[in-house]
Length: 484
Image 1 (cartoon, one colour):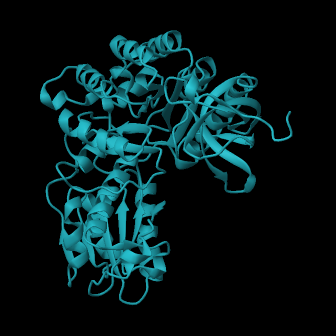
Image 2 (spheres, rainbow, N blue to C red):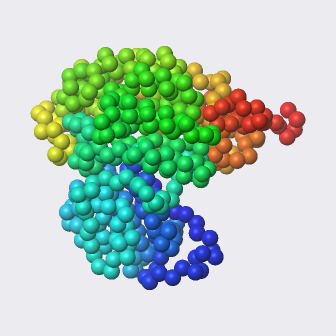
Image 3 (tube, one colour):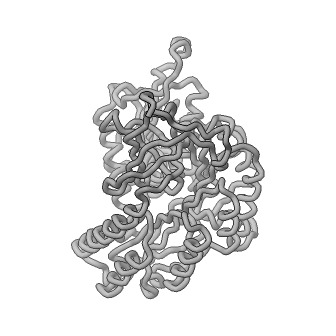
């Protein structure tokens, strides 16, 4: 659960006067695309004079942006609504929006009939009407997803050095287990001109790392007539024409969209992080076919081989599903063998969720929950063994790391990420010798000295620049105060 807040200068607070109070509190659940929608709603309200608070109990308006991807996501959304209804102050208004509202508004009304307003996932710009309404209301249109356009304000909530840029919504894939197409609707690509405009706005705000997001980046432009990844290549080339130092990170690229041309572009420009989030879901050909996936075991392995050969320092994140209907023990063991033979840097392991309305929900041979849980634990245990070997090889290396904050458990440690780690979802680099660190959100060379679980441990060596790490003017060496 991500709770958003922003300080408003005291002199502004004293001039605001909105009937019924003006304090807002946001809860944003689910994926980064949801977060961007939340940031747009936040921006709309801040522009109109509302202000945020850090505690739910202080808010006059509580806005919950829900997720409905899996049953677990819906349960989390319902829990957030319950918490808000129970702990809100007298007279406070609860607005529920997002994916769960779009598909399951009746369920929300049944459990929480006193929710003040329901706003559909494509109706983000209706947030002001929802907040200002004096009666219970519902606004759920046919617009199942939202793409920011024009002059609609957005208040970025992430740390100032990175932000998400949503380039498309909806999905043209038809994976058998996935409800995203029914939730978000068909693919809608944002125009190049609008993407470049938003990119420049983020850069002008001081953002150094821009994370491109969509359900599948490789599908960008296919609704406009582009084939395979030619649209994405065009878009990336346009972004890379922009001046200044920055990093681009690519999230969610399906393996069938990883082309030779894309690999060549990634290799050619150091401003594209050597990182891919590439959902594989499985490796057995029969399971992949039943999932309606577009790639085979052989194609996946060849893609991994090309990536490792052309970009040796690339980090690859993936997601895997265990317990898909009909998955045999032998097919599961094939998955276990695969992650041992083709080590991946980050893996999210999910139990298959039988989602109503998806083709897979009607398949025979549904796997018992107990078996799914056992397979999830077994696969996670094997991945831990794999990572232990992978991370041990990092000791002694120097990595380019953005140092982001103090560690929440100790002021003697700092937290950071190297280029192969995405914020919020991946492991971290823990800095236990940070004498030369003078600012957060800045990149440093860090020597890796040890491993702790999934995290690396290191000491900061010197401050470096963005992308062009040979820039001498930015290479400030760290020195010990005692002269060592």
